[in-house]
Structure formats: C-alpha cells, structure tokens
Image (cartoon, rainbow, N blue to C red; front, side, top):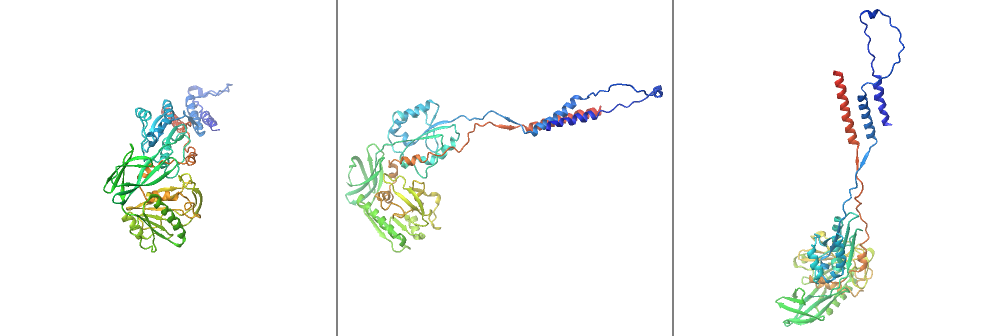
Length: 503
C-alpha cells in the first residue's frame, strides 16, 4: 500500500507539463489558423528527477515495514574447568580421582583450586600433588558458600565444570546452595582418623586430666586420660603421643602431625541456670546432659540454679537463660567484659517444622518446633550480620546460632529439649553435642572427620540454569539507515530543482 505512493510524483510530473506560447511575427499574423490533424503524444521529460522522487517514496515505504537484518550468532566459546577442594588436594584420596582429572585435562579443561580466589593449578604442581599425595589437615573451606561465585563465572549453558570435594561435614557450613546443571559435583569419600587434645585440667600437683578427641567418618568420640604432669609420652586410644608441659599450657603431637597446644584449666567448669515457670522442665534435660559429661570426661562440673535474674553468677563460665523475657543488662555485661558464654532459649512464637538435626551422626534427631529468630534486646550491642550457625536442620533452618559480644559469645537456641519441641532431650547425642560447646577447643572443628549424609549432599543438586543461552542471532533495525538515505535523496532533488530554476 505504501509503495503505491510513487504514483503521486508521476501524476504531478505529467500534470506540470506547460504548453508553449505561440507568438505570431511578421506577415504570419494575417494568416488564418487552419486545423491540422496530428497525433499528440505524451513525452516524459526530466526522467532521472522523476526516478529520484519515486525512490524517496519507496525508501520511506520500506522503512514503514520495519525491516531488520539478522547477523551471525554471537556464540561465546564454551569454558571447561576442573575445581578441587584444598583438603582433597592434600590427601591420599586424590589417587581415586587422578585418572578422571588427567582425562579431562587432555580434553582441554583447566585445573583450579576450589577456594575463594579459584587459583589456577599449574601442570607441574598437579603432577607433584597427584603422584605423591600425602594426608594433611586442612581446616578452611566452605563448599556450599562458594557455589554462587562459581556459578556466576560459568553462567553459560554450554560451559562445563567438574567439582571434586571431600564429603567431610566440617567443610559444609550454612544453608545448602542451589547447583547449576552445568556443574557436576563429585563428593569423594574421605577416610580419615584424627586425634587431638580437646582440653587439659589439673587434678593434682603431679597429674593432669586430658580430654582427647578421636574422629572418623562414622562419628567423633572423646576420652578422659590421666597422665603424669611431667610425662613426655603417653599412649592414648592406641596411639603414641608426645607431650610437653610449659607452665599453663600443654603441647601434644601424634606421629608426624602438627603439634597442638592447649591451655591447662585449673578451676572446675561452673554453669549458672536461670529459668521461668514455662521452661522448668527444660532444666531437668539440661542438667542430665551436663551430669553425663562430667563422669564421661572426668572434668569437674558444677551447676547452680540462679533464683534472681537481676544478677548473674559472676563465677560461672556458662550462663543459661531459659526465659521468655528480655536478657538483663547485667548478664550481657558479664558476657561482654568477662568473656562468659550465654545460652538464650526464649521458646517464643513456636512454629511447627518437620525436619531433623543435620549432621547428627547415625541417630536421626527430629525437630518439631522452632522459636522466633533474633535476640530481642536493644542494649545488647549485637550485630546480626556477625551471627553464624552452629546447629542446622535438614530443612536449612538455623537451630543454634552464635554471635560474638565483647570478650564472650551469645548462643541462641531456637527449639527445646522436651518432646514437644524436639527429640534432643531423649537423645544420647545431647551430651556429645553440648560437650564441644562447654569444653571448647578451636582445634576440635579442624580435626572433625565425620562425613556428611549423602541425602544432604544430593538435595542441593536440583536447580536448573538461570541464565539463557547466549547463542541467539542478533537483529539490527534498518529503519534509521533507510530514512537517512531517503533524506540524502531529498536533498539531491532539491539541489537539482534549484539549479534548473536559476538556469
């Protein structure tokens, strides 16, 4: 329809043909005109000017049709990479994945460490590590936490990533992250048997009580061993360990492992408990778990019920606030200034949940209810961004979180010990769970060799890619170019017309 507009300049061109004026001169003006039979014919003049004007209209008509030009697909080259976690790189389990990694390297894959910087592993370093692997303890690493950053770097559907990590649960912190389809995660079974000193206590002038830990894939256990204060060597859990005492500290070393130094405690562990009427039953479960820890470890533990909530037990190493009210400022002050540990269990706003305690060993401990999050105290000076998860449910909900406050820490427990809240109070694992908190030693988490349940690993490998394939054809509009060309032809038409008028 728009192209039919070319008829307009043709009609105007023909209409504008002006007849020549007859001028009679001399004796011709006395002659009478006579009719002559002649065929008149239509003759076009200025043909190129007509074509120019028609072309302008044709260009505008094509522009109205919104034409586009399809370019070649802008497919980006697929990226192929292999990532290996640090604890796997420094273990004899590396032999099990060496053939797969070598085959992938021959297919053009690049090799990287699974760390926040994703460093490239040179070929020479890989040959040294894989040909002579040795077992060494690597404490750092959060495999779930690094997944989003890894997915961001390999966001194309055609990218291919192989991720090799151990299945040790201490390297899986926080909430499981979704896994892209182009990332193939291979958890490697990690066989490890670690030993360490959890704590040391003075029993008498010439003897010490050592709380030692032993961890395997199946679980972690602690033993109490009495040794002479001046002993230079001892046999613990069937393993020979070298000892060295220096004033208030003890250094222990198993075999060729790195030496470990712990402080020697000289006072019994004192625990203060304050509760309201609603949580009176919780105290019985808590006291039973603590009483099981004392004979098991040999560490003297004293528990005291605090009748007044205005002043805490100033001699207590741990304070338990089993109360729905606000934590008193004096309690928070003792945490901040003396380094006391505070356990807050408010039992407020319970919400039903069907989940289990994650990484709880062989026994499945069900969690029935969760309380509201956050410690409601405006004077606490607590930064929620500094909180970290200690216990986690299989649904990804934090069960026990810890936040630093001055020299001490505040633990918030979001459930309870009685059967209405959870199965924790009836579980034989509760003393073991509380042991790592009441008798803390930083090395305990470093030596934890327990394996994460396979079902918890599989639950993260479900999410599809969120990015579209970038190999689509690019389309470019031709309208600006057509209008620009029509404008140039219009200028040419005006220039030619103006020159003819002046001629």
